[in-house]
Image 1 (cartoon, rainbow, N blue to C red):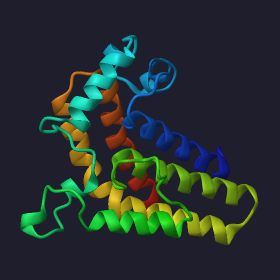
Image 2 (image 1 turned 90 degrees about the vertical axis):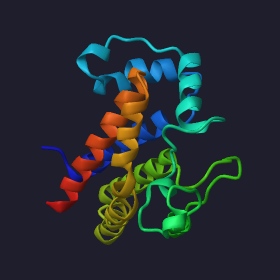
Image 3 (image 1 turned 180 degrees about the vertical axis):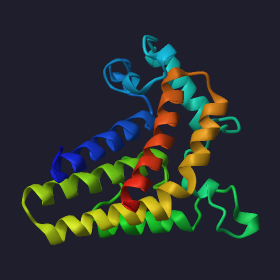
Image 4 (image 1 turned 120 degrees about the horizontal axis):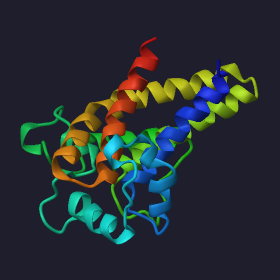
Amino acid sequence: MITKEEEAKQRAALYEMLSIAFYPPKPDVETFWGEVLSKFADEKDISVTVKALDLRLEYNRLFVGPRMLPCPPYESVYREDREPDERGTLMGPSVWDVKKRYSEAGLAISKDFMDYPDHVAVELEFMDFLCSRESFATAEKKEEERALWQSREKEFLESHIRKWTGVFSEKVLKSTDSPFYRTAASFLKEHVNDELEYFSE
């Protein structure tokens, strides 16, 4: 049986993996696929090799443009709790709320980051950070602090992550044949469901 510290570490590692998968591909993305992400692939895709250039092209097609995006990677686009004429657009209320939550946790968006703060990779990286902080607090036997970080995880999961990543994942699955992005989308959907179950227990 794993300890609470190890459990929080494992959850952080899964969020980190997903965050990396949805950031623009880095030069070592082929290694990341071979050693990390492919472990969560369908049986038929496990032995597939991926090429960095192909992934960069597919990432741009799916998430960047310049043409109409099949899968915008921003929470604002998917939120239904907006005025009808604002639905499907960028920079909704969720943007300001995620920025506020990042700030309350002691974080700020890097000046070098030129995208929106409700990008899927950023939100997943934030969950990685929260789970890591929970793990540190648990290791130091700071129960009050541990409870605070876990409370922030639950609130962010329920207020943001769960509200849109299911639809986003489905769009990715319908829009690409890339084993890399299909695996990332499938596992994102599965992991969010596991997390919701974890917090409901």
